[in-house]
Image (cartoon, rainbow, N blue to C red; front, side, top):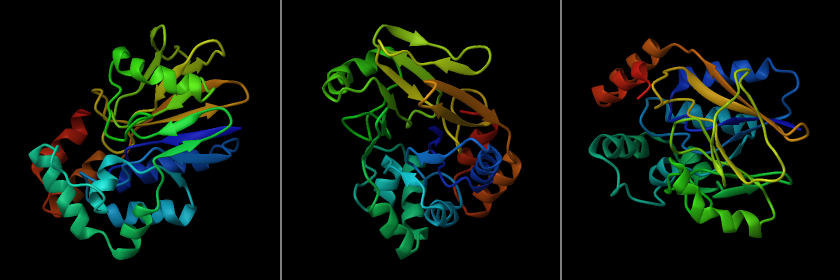
Length: 242
């Protein structure tokens, strides 16, 4: 089965529409999974939630989603992220708030596990190889060798024996003898120096992950952020991919 994997939309409607249009044009994609953080930072939380709701998309609760719907408070957020999170909480309508409150912390499939941050918490970052080490026992106990996670906004592939990179053809062949943690990057706020929206394709039959980058109307997204009265920094960073 081939899954499209998206994550960290962060209320960026322009990026979301661009990515979903690309996915919809792929005839062999059978399902799409969102790893969370549908909202936060950018200007269109209601519309982004409603798009996922209308598609009945499998979606995980991200840390910004949890703050927006009132499950958590943004005490560990930086001032800009906190301002955006509280703005988002006020902006969301009741139906969308209630939908966020129904989202799970983890999705388990026959061939992989999907989380927002890490298996233990949506707030845990797996940025470096050392960050995956505390989660290897969980994967072994789950009898699963693949975890798909978001949260860092940067594409990455880690295994129990080190760091891997996507091949030149943008595809990575997942073996059966190692544990892998794969991050598809962010749709709505990439932070790896590339402003293009990021997502992934996971073929569970062929055991292949494909990393995809796609440009979207960044200037329009920036304009929406400023029109909403959100911090200038949030608009500026979209063009930088930081």
